[in-house]
Length: 475
Ligand code: MN
Ligand code: MN
Image (cartoon, rainbow, N blue to C red; front, top):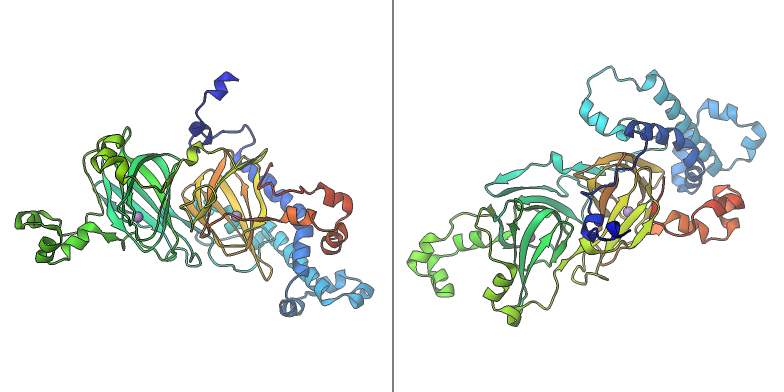
């Protein structure tokens, strides 16, 4: 259709133009999901339990209830191995939890934070398959202190807010039209995605060439550690908002090297000797940090490039990436994924990303990443994730726009769309490439007898499992 084709790519890719699929209400979707859960996960969970470490089996057997013994015939009990007992115990625990969640056991006569509970039903009343403690996997930018200055604001989710997240830290920043995030540099590499509006960015190379570019919604940039750079909000709207991700869990926006702070802490005679500044110039220098501050809009990009010396000083390295114009790396009936790492954005050597869109009821399939922990940022929609860790631990949390998710290194996980609109989020890694393993792909590339021995399913059932790593499955 010509009408469809004429739609700009940027619009198709944009999470602001979310497709609202006509389907049941969010409430209904959740209800269905929970009802289907035990049936869908049974064989997988038992398979997992059978591979538990031997030292984990002992406490489970001690906890074996009388009811479980009565349920298992004496002959089969005699031949039962430690491993199969552990399976029975864990299955019993799950049955107990299922029952308790339906009766008065789960009632809460005391106080509660209703808003928080409503937002996180899977944490409040976990799926019976959840077990144990894997540490925090959720935080939200909407809980972080917001530093508001004339010209914009910033807030951050770092290792201080989400302690297990040691690899990456995130900063969400807004700068108004014309305003600057001051000239600065820092110890970490900086990756960014423009969330709204427009900005002009600059970064200097050690050889004196300079990169200047304008970025719009969906565009990325990458500035290596120590490279001095700037960000300025542009029109036509009121500046911009973006997400910065640093390859250092303890990174802090409040601890960057600012040009204003450096001149304020350098003896005046040194500034004269170094930069030929006279007394009157030194008297006008800022005496405190600027950080975010208002300024006039810059000239056009072409004029700014010409003003610094044109082609002669133009950076040979490309520091921005037009993700908004990129075709999906993988597209399935369930959604799509765009992957950007050092293969297609060569300067991004330390940070790899997948921008995932999941249609209502769809899910990012059971998978894991062999090379790094995963730091997530949710851009739109509602979803839930369960993270699986040994020995037999699992935690489910709900995620909304502006939330941050965390998956420990190599831990198994899935993300399901639980809302009525597209779920859009970033999977981010401190790595030069995006790599994942799909559980389905693994199962389908093994001899069937091996799968039958482990999961106790027949060959016809195995054949129904998708053979390839599809990333996003339909609901
Ligand atoms: Mn920076
Ligand atoms: Mn993942």
